Length: 538
Image (tube, rainbow, N blue to C red):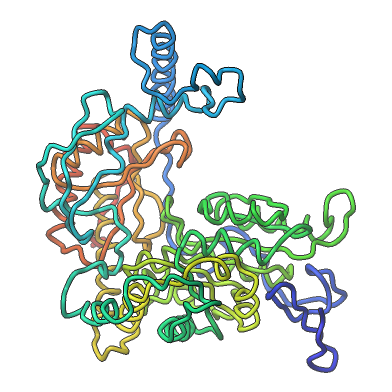
């Protein structure tokens, strides 16, 4: 509906999102002052990011490696078919052979023949606090990773380079956690009801006001699960007849939410403003397919920090395009809130832009705040709309009181409302650790991706065999790392993903770098052809 707010101004409300313009999707008669054309690398706000390409032989050997394991996979399937090798995979019962199969044999080829042989590098059970160091339960397999058994031995003091504990709030200091323990004792572990029924506690409303104040927006709403914050709220904002422009490297939760919405989805190249502007122009000029009617809404979906690339969104350029073409912007700050910006307020602070220019601000409490859940923030009309239309708000159980208090405690610490400077110290320490770790990896000759400000540090391994060897060798040196490969990454860009924390000491980082240097030499992982030095030129 449209509400007249001032002479000559029409404020359009569309499912909680609103804009001040007299046209739709940028179709208006007047001209705007847009300044210089927005393109890749055209903004003074752009951050230094590296995406170095490896030598050609690395890509060739990566494809050869996947080809070899694929051939062996088919050979092993043949051995299973003739019952020479035992088949451990899930199969149809003999009396159900004529039914539509539950287990697609070809679709499970990758899982049973590639992933199964190396899955000892994932799902490792820890048995301590996931702080800067943790303890790991040792397990072994007697059947090539189809099953595991525990040895009863614990691997102590493994340096944790994989958890999203950016500010070190995943801690068990009794002085810090006293209020959390008090709330757990007073309210219990769960609410057992939705916010709309009898699960709305005073602390939930306190947290939402605190989040709004922290972000500098009118209102906010919290949810008990970070993944559902995206997947269940996007369908409430857009639907059939709407267009979503999604970065090609967006998180699965954003992709799922977009698909559930029923809106048309188009994907633009990662952080490529020329690709985005081309799609915006086409959307505005051509409208919907076949009918050419204007799109009801155009929603741009991006992340603050991309969790697999370590790259930072080009927010000023995207905001310029959003205003130029009268689109909406959905910003996922799961990895950037608390982790970047002088006071931890995310990419809006990093680029010094007005948070009110972002239509929908989303973030999670699972990383920088050492808790669980997520939030949606923005205009009050947006939040009020979602309270009645979001599936995650209407049907999901309210956030646990202890988790809520943990988030409040961490956020007050970051904002300095606890009367200390501990929060700002952690933010500065994270920034210092991030720059140090990234610069040293470059000096050692590794190829790493992302922005210098990003605590997510992908180290490229490329070849499938080296991914497995790297993870096992690092664990043998009591360093816990996360390795990622196809299909989570492009087939030629398997990597190890390090997450730097404010809780890491310089000695810990130096120890990790020392072992990386040795493992990098042993496995021939130093593919960079650039020369880096942290020492200024004389």
